[in-house]
Length: 69
Image (cartoon, rainbow, N blue to C red; front, side, top):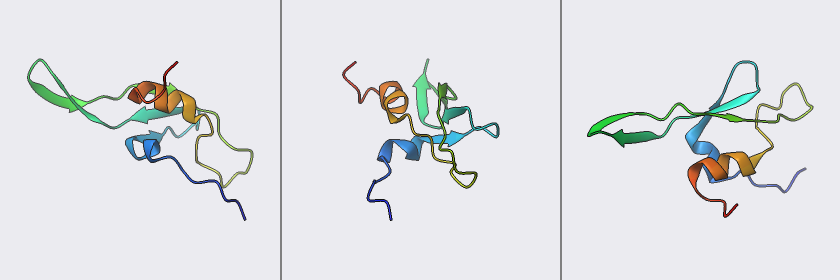
């Protein structure tokens, strides 16, 4: 059993049907109007056919401004 914990950052993303991108679902305020972010972030999925969780947390965290790089 894996002891890895899923990052809370994934709560803001959904995986595209082709499993290649995570789409940001945050609500942002631009020009006084609220809208969905909808930015696609490159994802790398696990090798298991049942695995739908992206493994490149760095890309997700970078988009959210959580990464220092």
